[in-house]
Amino acid sequence: MKITEIAIGTIEIPLLTPFKTALRTVDRIQDLLVRVTLDNGETGFGEAPPTAVITGETIPSMQAAIRDYLAPSVLGLDPSDREECFARLEKAMAKNTSAKAALDIAIHDALSRALGLPLFRYLAQKTPEQARAELETDLTISVNDPETMAADTRDAVARGFRILKVKVGKGGETDVERVRRVREAAGPDAVLRIDANQGWTPEEAVRTIGMMEDAGLNIELVEQPVSCHNFKGMQYVTAHTATPVLADESVFAPEDAARIIEEHGADLINIKLMKTGGIYPAEKICDMAEANGIACMMGCMLESAVSVSGAAHLAAARSIVTMCDLDGPSLCAENPYAGGPIYREQQILLPETPGIGITRVPVDFRPVG
Picture 1 (tube, one colour):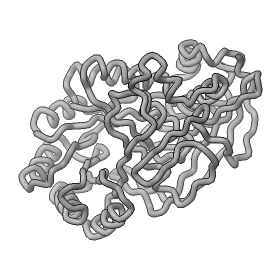
Picture 2 (cartoon, helix red, strand yellow):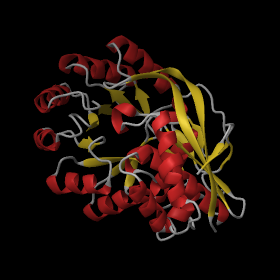
Picture 3 (cartoon, rainbow, N blue to C red):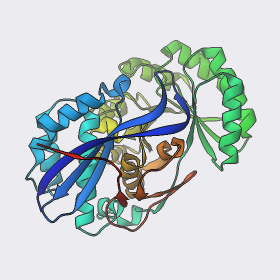
Picture 4 (spheres, rainbow, N blue to C red):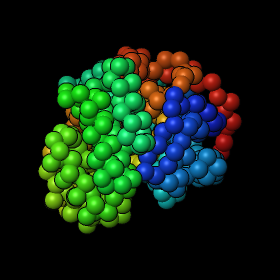
């Protein structure tokens, strides 16, 4: 097999409600799509969002990265030589993790389609007993005034969501009130995860989390409480709170995961393909976490079903991934694709069709390279 063509396009999908975090507010998905074609005619799809505030990438920058650097580096390669493909992507360009991820997902999709295997079965070939065809995702409650967050929570519970990720990070005592109102609306049995998106200082994080603990709000974990670059701050929060700390923006590459583990900068790791640069390097983080007994979450940026499906397949292949934050498709007002995993509110059901399973992507693709 050889990669013979790489093409790109864009897609826009409105959200059900604005997505608000401590870092940004978004009302629609505007993502880059990638299509990889093999010499046997098989195709695969990938996707990347322009999350400039986290990865530094925009649609134009990702288009240029793929057109001028990444696509030329892998055209003509055998997609089954995954080590060589990713090494070429890494050598072609520093950073640009989302652009790399879109291409990496498309290559994995095309490869597993050509082999006649669902991607999660292909990824779990060495440990087939770990593969599972059903996952459960949480749903994000955007940061707003406490009353709006309570109303959004009631809607989420009515939709059947059992696990909620509550966005905070915009003020200590107000954040406590936000979570208190969410807990009241969700009821005692709901699982609440809070995500500060780097919004607190270390001292503020410890104080705020402590207030939530004292109030008996029963928080499962707190995600990225301080700046992604503040490793000592992450250590401080982890050491001074009883609530487990999940590292998100602090972990892009396997090297970051190694540092978090070695320095005990967090109790858990959130793996996102848009940070790692794709499935292949994400597997390295899974290996590292498994060796050290560190449970992982499989997360997503603001993505639609194409790249979220890639992440779901990896999560389904690895038992070290015990939590999923793959609610991107559930936040969208519509699903323009055909095929792929079924997103039935909190349930994600993976089909036994080859690749990631998506059969129709209504995008005007333009060849590059």
